[in-house]
Every structure is written in C-alpha cells, then in structure tokens.
Image (cartoon, rainbow, N blue to C red; front, side, top):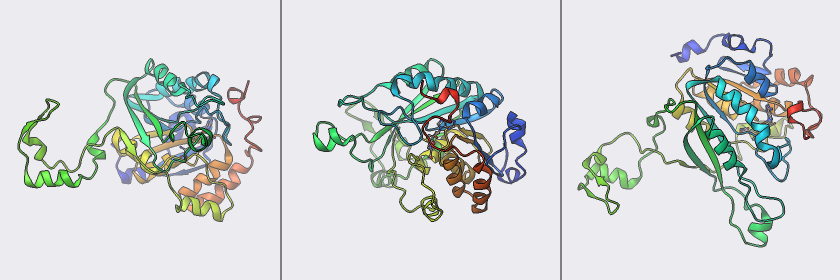
Length: 337
Ligand SMILES: C[S@@+](CC[C@H](N)C(=O)[O-])C[C@H]1O[C@@H](n2cnc3c(N)ncnc32)[C@H](O)[C@@H]1O
C-alpha cells in the first residue's frame, strides 16, 4: 500500500495508466482532471486497474439540464457503453458506485422506472452489492405542479445510490464509516443491558454492550445538500464562474471512499462535474482520475484545489472551450439522434 508521503511525488503513474496521450487540465500529486469524453479515457485505461468508480452521471430528465441530459428513452443505450468499460477497468475487488436520481414522465404525475431498469441491466453485468438511498431533506418540492400546486404527490427527496461490484467480495470495511453512538446507545454501553429476546425473536446478547467505536451506518444516508457558504461557491462568485448546477455533497463521496478504499487506491469519476470526487480523494490520500466534458465545469472545479491551478487551467482549457451545451459540439455518441 502506498503511504501518504510516497504519494507526494511526481504524477508519474498517469502515463503508466495508458493516459500519456491525454494532457490533464490540471493535476495534483494525487490525481488529474481531464477535459475529455470519459469514454475515451475509460477505453485507454488498462483492465483490472481501478479500485472504485464513484460517479453521478447526467440523469435522464424530462426537462433538460444545462449540460444536456439524455432523454429517458435513450438513456440505457447511451449509458451502457460507459458501464461496460467500467466493468473492464475495475479490479476484481473493485466497486462501481452510481448516484442516480429519479424522473417523472412528461405531463403526468407518474414516475419513470429508468433508474430501476438501469439497475436490473447492470445487475446482469455486476453484482449488486447493496442499494443505498441518499435522503436530502433540503430538496425543493418539485415538480411544483404535482407537489405544491395540485398537491397530489409528496416531494421527491431521495436519490438511489447503487453499489455494484465486479465480484461477490469487493473490498469494503464498515469500520471506516462508523457513526457516533446515539445517546441511548451510549447509555446502554455505560449502564449495561439485560440480555433478552426482542419481539421479533432476535436474541439481544450482552455483546451489544461492547463499545465498538461507533454505530454501523444504515443504507439510508441523510445529507442535506445545502452548500451555501463553501469556498467553491465563494470563489466561483468572485471569479464570475457559474457553479456546477448538480453537485453532490462531499460527505456522500467521502462515505463511499472511506468505506470501499484504502489510502493510495485509485478512484475514477467519469462524470466529474465540479470534481467533488477528486477533492475528497485528495483530502483522503487516494489517487484519482476525473473526467468532465464541459470546460466551464473543469475550470470551476480547479477552485477546489490549489488556487494557483486555477489561472493555468483557464488558459489551458480556453482552446477547448465548448460554445454552448446544446449538444452540437458534443462527441457523436452524445448527440441527440
Ligand atoms: C451530475 S453531473 C456530475 C456532478 C458532480 N458529481 C459534482 O458533484 O460536481 C454530470 C456531469 O457529467 C458530464 N458529462 C456528461 N457526459 C460526459 C462524458 N461523456 N464525459 C465526461 N463528462 C460528461 C456533464 O457535463 C456533467 O457535468
């Protein structure tokens, strides 16, 4: 295993990963951000070389976001080539964690099942290690027509986070993501417990009294996505950059990075946006490769790192600038057909 110090050396492992022909938009001693179509980067990586692919791809939305989400009907066809490459590049102990939101059918208060169809399809390629639910209590009550105007649906505040693995036994250790004990659990550890059967029939033994350093988290992860005063947002404002509109919270990325990888492991985010994944990897001493198709997001993402990177990146990405995210200058497989 690489140590923190060993990682603070030149970024020589990037060419060794088959990426020598791609120039990173910026890099740190631990990782590199590429302004590129991630299918090209994934295809260039050697097989069985990545510990974790952690990502949030564009969701299939009825109303298109500014970075051009794929429509529901074509979503699987668009997304599967990325997933097959991800399967190829993962180590046998590797995981593929996918944050994906639901969608509504156009004009009616009916849910699309595209993200379940995706999970079923992926479960034929990968093992479904576990499904997680990211509950964001700060989510706005949308679609307004169904939730706040006609009041016939409640607010949609949960994203699915599918945890797939290449084999049945991916690397994972829940001791790395223990949560603080509740007050009642602290009381129990301190004052003891009479071993007895629960109404469900489960034996609760005195083992429950042992202090294991924290409680094992559930697969419902509650994180309010309210980042109103971060350095990223402040610097974006100062520099006249529009922040990425669909960032996931650092603590969501941190949970899976801590749970599924060790220091020095390699994590890839093929839909990196504002590069939350790379920033958390940097802080957690993991190596990382991030890929984003839009130069404006790549530029803004440099803010998360050493600020001296930022000016460099703006210069370097200028020649690759996409004029407008209307799909016209996107690679062939990303264009609307
Ligand atoms: C939901 S956002 C990711 C946000 C990110 N998790 C964050 O916290 O900032 C999805 C991103 O994927 C990018 N994208 C779409 N197709 C891509 C491709 N083929 N290669 C690389 N990036 C792509 C979009 O431009 C968008 O920024």
